[in-house]
Length: 95
Image: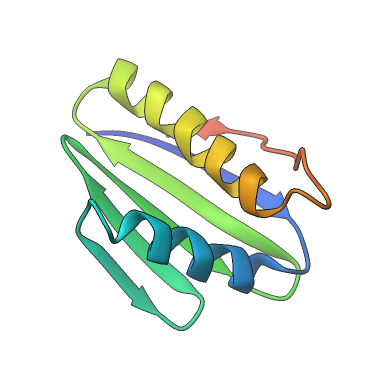
């Protein structure tokens, strides 16, 4: 299993997680509880947990190449919803 994580500074993380999960729920399996969302893609899962300071994003999957692509997709989508403060900072750490 390959994993990458980032803590993305923003005071509006809960709002962005909820918007993003609602957006992806039209096409993908999504679990949303409060400010925590889990989105299941083919071959990978993205988990986003927001607090008052940031969004903790984790992307896990079997294939590193797919996880690498998906982390960029997640970042681009968060930035779309955070357009007033985008681009946000994503310091990805591979685990």
